[in-house]
Image (cartoon, rainbow, N blue to C red; front, side, top):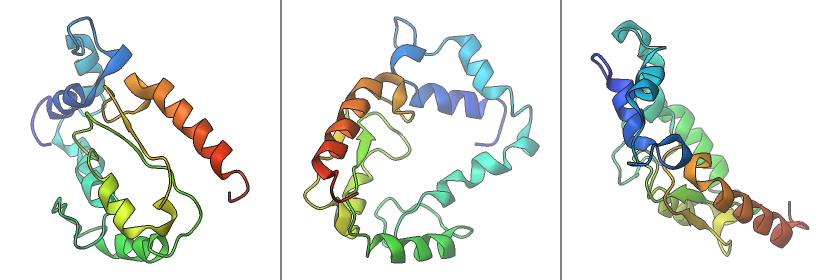
Length: 150
C-alpha cells in the first residue's frame, strides 16, 4: 500500500453499489476522499497491518502474513474452533480482501454448521454498500431461525 494514492486506488477496487456512479466506479473526488487521511507513507502503518489482523488459522490457504497478529489469531482460533453458538457468514462476491474466506469458517467453527450462510451479490468489501438489503434480510432470517440459541 505504499506510494501516492494507493489507499484510494485500493478502495476504488473494493467499492460497489450506491457509492459508485453509473459506470460502476467511484468518482475521482471519492477516491481522493479515501486517500485524504493518508497524505504520505508515514500515515499507512495502520492500513498496512490490517491483513495481519484478519483472523485466519495458520493453515489458511490465502497465505496471509501473520507475523504481528499471528499469536493473537491463534488464540482467537482456539475460541472459534470451540464456538457452538450459531454463526452467520455473509461475505460478498466482490470483496478483494475477505471474499471467499467463508470456507475457512465453515471448516473450523462448529457454530457455522447448518446455518443459512449468504453470499452478498454485487457488494464489495463494505457489505453495506451494495449489499445492505441482502445483509439485513440474512440477519433477520438468522435471528428468527436461531432465537432460542442466541
